[in-house]
Image (tube, rainbow, N blue to C red; front, side, top):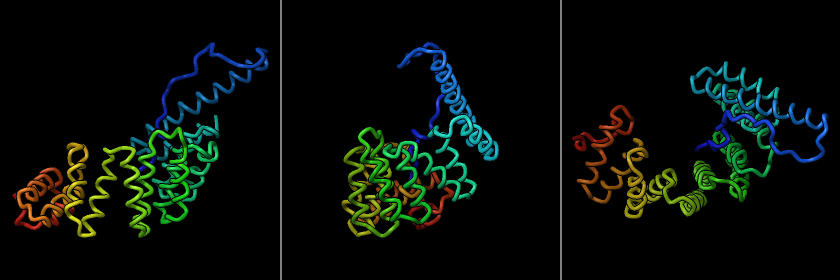
Length: 262
């Protein structure tokens, strides 16, 4: 399951001087506007610094920068989201949830924060609580990645034992983005588990066509198992070779029968 990366992407562009304003041009209004711009800029810059610390695995430094950002502007959604991610990484679940919810409170109808809170709740074992947030995410007409939210919803439903609901969500994700690798893999896996290897193979082939960048040990092992079940020895051997070449130390590679080794 994945967070919405748009909420985690913060630029360094500063507000330009002489921007267009509305309302009466008075010294008081200019002062308020200048202060607001400075707060927004400060929050943006400190949030980006916090992200850089997080990427360098300096989570304490990241928290320091992000808390400073929130002092500049507590309603800066990216800061609320990124600090939630940091708290989640240090296993501080209460504070992570607090900030995911604060990010959502800033604009309750926005798709990204709804998706992110849904992911957090599902990863916390609260699938029933998570589902309404995925529904709100895809209901946002301006949400740019509804396929992501449908995929996350499907993964959450699958974890909760709702196989039919999960399949429907994955298919909705693919209806929006036919190259959604996670949805293709999940549908292939679900069909394989239901002993429908022929249809599973069709989704696996679509997944494979996305290219090497989408490869994972789980997918290559699944491809091997599907072809083996269908009796396609050469195709199964091709998957096993790729798995052992690309991910030789993976659990999936070790699980392969030695007769499938190159």
